[in-house]
Image (tube, one colour):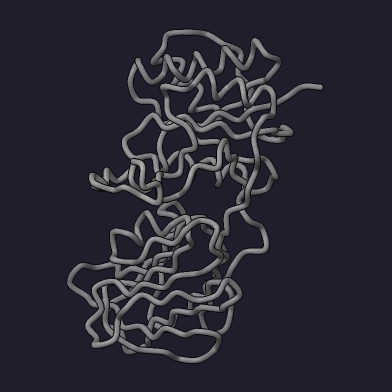
Length: 298
């Protein structure tokens, strides 16, 4: 039975593309058929000046999505594989690569685990988002990291009211509002001053962006909570909706954005059970010098 692996990469240099081609060659040698987006395959092979027989990913029974790049590439893989059940494995070729499960230095060891199917798959909470205008649905999408409602013009503040489980909570002028998943809590939401949420916690987070209000703190709510952001009709500015920074829709005054947990999560490959705290320390270079821990003999 043919095994298909979708390869997604942001390789921009000859060194990075060599790593991608090396990974593809290894998997091909071990019985995989590699599938790419057609434009991406052409770009990688042109950088590497090689010719390999890659197929297009569409309509193929993908076993795994292999990402060689950073978090942006993982979000792109999630988009490509949204209609499948294939899990995503990130191998970091970028800078932080917070969502990646492995680093480039352990590429061959990681690929051996892929060949042997020696890994776990855990689901990450995703969001469904719907835009309503005059009670009519005008846009529908989803997000793994966050849904962002932002002002579309720098000089125009966005007037919004936020809603939790069909009850109004606060109204204010702002640069925007984020609704984040735990996965997204270390991305845009982190930069906006939100708390880091451990990935095993099921929750949603709402964060006002530069709100002109006395109460504009992040809200952390249960996963079944229904959240809404309405652009008030009195708003002098219009807005724009972003889903993971990839899918977008313009919002005029009176637009209503409804966000809830998606019934379809994102499956992600897990290679080990290292504590999430260790990942935080490593990725953000947090200072822990002097820690002794529970072992008094350290």
